[in-house]
Image (cartoon, rainbow, N blue to C red; front, side, top):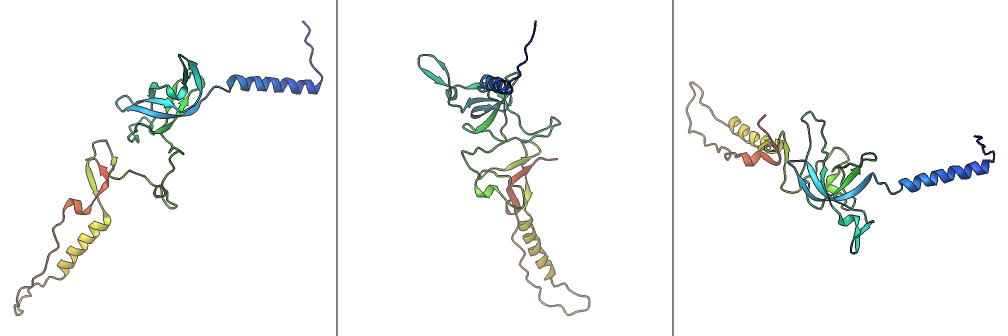
Length: 209
């Protein structure tokens, strides 16, 4: 069989464009990452039921059914960690928007809850020009060590104020000196007794280790 090689550069350019357009047309509908809404999350299996946020007609059964009306159950959720026992997790609420990754070969899907949705911009309190910020809803604490962590940390400012008050009392004590004329005992007010709540933070809890 004789193969005729085209010599017309214009023809070759048109052929390359046709091949490229054909490839784009065949892969244009393959999505490897879409936004999805959390329908439910099971922490015992680390899987979520999600609803893709893609408004696209996917089938017709007694009417129109769109992709954002479909739900995908049992999608693995990948939290930050390395498999050595180190991980960072947080409550994954219903309605949260997360990236849904679809592998381009096996078509398996995974959820990576690692990005704040642009639909709900970060508040100004979540950013600092000098240090990283861990943003927590009001009333919630960061648990360090394990999920049962319950021991609160002491705050430096409140602890220092209490120590300064005790130090002031001790420095003002009048102690008898041998051979000196005894005077009336000094009445020195001692600081109000301190409770754990006076000096602890409610934003960080640690375990017993």
